[in-house]
Image (cartoon, rainbow, N blue to C red):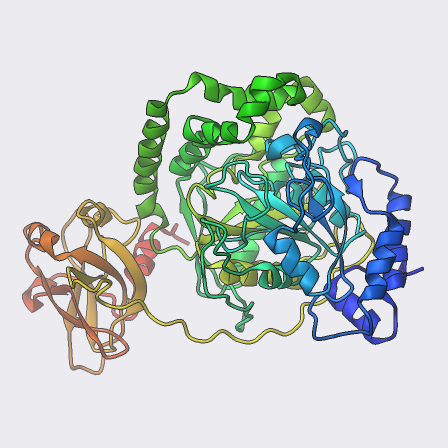
Length: 618
């Protein structure tokens, strides 16, 4: 028996290198499942004899295969050749001839698939209780819902019976169950994991997701499974990037947005509120700049997921079944998806327009941020609460997840230290499409200092393996398109992200490029007058000059005249030298305009100056 062996990739690799056989590991997988004693984790559990035969077929230990002998499970809306795919609906079941694209890649890397896991029917739900095959029990606390829709996939990893599992994520199904079972849930950029061989929920928003005990393991599986698939019209070819661990911490120097006090939602769960505050403080202590933002536009986007176009998209998957055998569909699923039958094509297009408007409204808030950090779930829900109200608690679970795929963001849910009541802590780090490695690298840093066990197991979290420092990221081009129709503009004051005059840029179609600094040849002043208070940037050859923080924005040349007409004296647009020696257009101040101004060159950052003005007197 291998009962003292945690099923992490590093532990399994070490065990195999020391002579342990994959036959022994398979025997132990089934022994662990017997001890767990939950018949509702799997819809189809492969016979042990079949897995032993597959383990024998691996041959001699091959360390060059990244997942050699690693046991895993697959959500039963993802195809595995020769095993029925049910999507938790017996009337829908079919038996595929081939593996889904991602399953094939994992098996080719040496992984051993032991079974198909239970789910909320047709991946519609975040609680894990909407299945005719029964509901799996939460691995940490059976009184709490297991989370959905990828319930069985999360529970089996939470129990430590497999090394990883595949789920899917449209509204949070790869993140919510991770939080509830004290494990990692990686929701990649849409299109980086092929959806070939996956029963869709909302095809335009779906992604395969990964559950694992650690960030490192989840990302390693992602790196193996990802790849461009020409057969999937929604597949996208993003360059893979490794996890990195720059000193002193991955979060150092990043601007990370969190819900502000007015928009943060915890539904009365004070322990969850306290745990999130603790985890944000940890990010701040690691060197991140925490930026509080109004999440109202994101909540409005989240509310759209089960309205209009996207409910209709779910309806396309089961329309024939609803017409021919409506009783075959779970009553709650039928209630939710049936809304589509009251909608028109006009409603769908209105939904698209509304989403575009809300994205535009949210853009200034997100510009200049590297990541968002949110509670993975706002509160916990019990099985009894869902029995009394099958919809309300489920909707709450999606508070911080439903907007993510609509915004084309990637994310990773990572366990943090337990809450004050012993329930698992969890935050999700969200980034722009293609920034999966950034989100995972910062999430991995939580594993260095947060004391916890893995899932419901007694195994302590292993120390992460050393990771390389990142290569310097290439800076965005100053002119962002080939037609030379835009101009880069450096702003150093009230036009920066989140400050009073930023809307003057965004209204004219400006896009954020990056944060930067000037060459060390400028004096910086807080000018007299206002509101709004304004800075003045003056080029100087004196020894008391310094570098000043700026933001670079890309402004259409056709809008430049309108922008210039609103600039008051003593400010003007001139040429500003950046720290790397390049020149861009930017705000400068006439020397005479500094009369009566305060020299803030030593601060070198308008935001720092504003913070000092609002800080309480000591």
